[in-house]
Amino acid sequence: MRNSGDSPLAGWTVAWAFADGQTVGQLWNGTATTSGSSVTVGNVGWNGALGVGASTAFGFIGAWNGSNGVPVVTCAAG
View 1 (tube, rainbow, N blue to C red):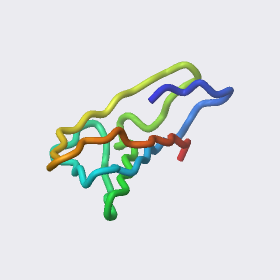
View 2: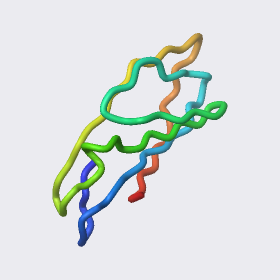
View 3: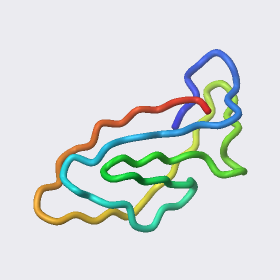
């Protein structure tokens, strides 16, 4: 997640929908909320504030059965 805007961010979220039933297992540097195939990851307390040009990252271990299609991702300041 990179703040490429004109002002600092107080928080952020990244959301996507899995295409083929994939799931999120372990997640680090964020907080995940899932509903069906939809996943939203938000900042944790120490990585939410991003100055202009600053960045942070999160990661997760996922799982799937059968196909493993590419999800569509959206980002938002929160």
